[in-house]
Image (cartoon, rainbow, N blue to C red):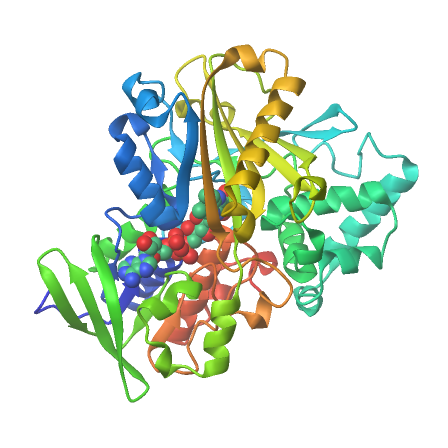
Length: 506
Ligand SMILES: Cc1cc2nc3c(=O)[nH]c(=O)nc-3n(C[C@H](O)[C@H](O)[C@H](O)COP(=O)(O)OP(=O)(O)OC[C@H]3O[C@@H](n4cnc5c(N)ncnc54)[C@H](O)[C@@H]3O)c2cc1C
């Protein structure tokens, strides 16, 4: 590496940085170097065939890459591996789905770069209300057919849906800094309508409390899903069990390598070197020792709330540092249920409440779960079922073992009480928790213009591209958005307009 020259250094082989790197390598002919501190490419998008791992490598990989940690399993982790109970299953670090499926930013951008994804769309959904399961297929709720609502409820829900879908992106952004609760209560007093939208918003934003969800960012997400022709029973998907969701960062990295760039793992950037307000390069710890690499452009895709660990904060105004350090994140409790036969029939299912304030949580806790092996049979051995379940948790709740375990107990209790045969079919369970599914939660004052900009106004040559920097909406599609924006700022070419349809551009 010592004698090689690079036009751009990307910190992190997750999604945002490699998206920017791939566009700059393929479309601008730039030579790109990606430096990743973990031992594998993927960031929070890592996937596993656990028969190829051992317990300690698995625990370390989810920690290092995905801000996720193992909590417990039944039987214990060593036993799960020793008995081969996980053999033949394909796992994600948490639940991994793309809301807008093939029409979202991730696949649109990868298709633009010549690497379309293989996706298995969800085509059925379940909704629990009043102790009863309502089933939908192929978007059958289109037109506002919600059987548990009366006519007034359906009309109100339809009214709110169409307000969101018809809204301009500019108007949606004008609601960035007010809460969904405030926005909704000014427009309807119908409890079923509110419940429907609050549950959807939790699934969109990974935040339970509608008072903590940005109305603008949630509207943008609903608007994109509907304008792309998706519904809650006809949106979301699984990626193929092999290689799993990690195919997304791997594909972006492949584009970089195919266009003369390099991707180096076990390479931790210790410091971004800055002189007189301008990026000079990076100091990196890698196999073979410490190395200084000169480069005028650095794109950071590490979590913004961790950026000052390696980009000295003295180069930024105090107010910026304080704001970035003050962001709070949204986490999840993710549970994998291994069943010896198919019990859950719907691809994805929503439950408005499994716990609440009365148990010590900030708000009603909602649950979602996926029949992962139903969408892609490669995710479980023949005849068996893998169900991935999750609840949203604030970062504080994620670090409270008592609350985390309480949520797990309620999740398991719901499944055993409501799905006949579930208890008998359950072969094993695996429980994990993450505090950073969305590192800068989509809360009022944390989205839109509150996010750090893709092109740093403080340091020349420094760019940010992650799901916690300048972008809209959530998670993977947000990281891709951030990468496209960063590539546009580096090159002065409007890639957002070139790559993305209107509904996912802003
Ligand atoms: C449990 C869980 C479940 C999720 N479920 C979904 C889902 O269902 N749908 C969805 O769309 N998204 C989901 N996400 C979110 C999705 O994974 C992220 O949005 C996406 O990976 C963000 O990409 P990124 O590039 O912003 O960050 P990351 O993927 O976190 O990548 C950043 C990379 O930078 C590296 N890095 C950091 N500092 C340094 C340094 N100093 N030197 C070198 N490398 C460094 C990190 O190791 C990491 O690999 C989930 C995330 C988690 C944790």
